[in-house]
Image (cartoon, rainbow, N blue to C red; front, side, top):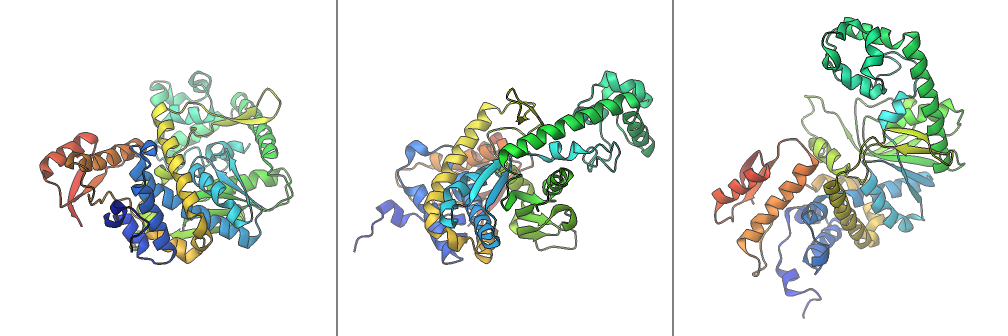
Length: 433
């Protein structure tokens, strides 16, 4: 009996990612089927250099994560979800598609970043502003002043150590830090900074009011995760305005060094990790933390720099730069494929929201360019181009070295390696099978 699929669909082998999730069985098989269908259907007008990146990794991760979040929210009685910018914009797009399957949970996008929530303290000290230095043991003065929105000329009269070196002065010692904080507490600078903090807090409150954070509904934030700084800062701000509710949070992964629960409020995470040297076994999200963070952080806008009052008198987010045209092109392509993928996954999204299933699927996915050419009309050059196009797409997202695994089926391995090197590969590993 003839199958409903075309000949090409019947003979095309599973990619590595498809095989990995189909091996889980059940929902994994259906997810793999969606991945396979979208790559074999005649969607030529939809394809781009980001198609493999989207279908083999981004769309499955964001869709399964969104399904899990929606399932958890429904189970816990959460009526509204706020997906934090920028890391969760693509996940929000998937959640909007899937929400009707989970009782129509209200999915909103919250323009927020830790760089604008954390500076809300009027305690001008290292304890009150831990975000300023962060983990940087030798910060450059100019960078610190930029984060504080202070000009070098207005600061330097109160900070003598940097008079000879200027904005490139590096704060290396405890004496440097002590002098820096003393300068910030000078009455002239202190008054300016505290006034700005008050103005920004009022603009933030206005923005949160327009977004419904003060509504009498149970809501939660959704973010990629790691340390929970945003949830802790948001909860602190809301409490400073005498808000009596509780901030809940849903995360892809959180680390052992995260903020304590008494600062964040309740959290639920798909993965929990410990990056200590003793812990050798890690879920895939922590093994590839930098890559995942950068890929999921694809958005059509830059990080929010501050809140301020707009012409209508309400608080609005502001950015200090624009998004490059190539970044917008990348986002638009990934957004399109994520929404198409989520629509195909709707039928099994409830099953995919199960924690054990979601963990197994995401842990099985690996960003891998493994491909078997079964199309007799496809040339060797076209096959090699898939590797190079994926590499170029990744290099636009991340700056860490990328090592490419090669198939054993290339006719001219040396020429392929030369092309990968020209496209930015740091090395190659033969062979992937």
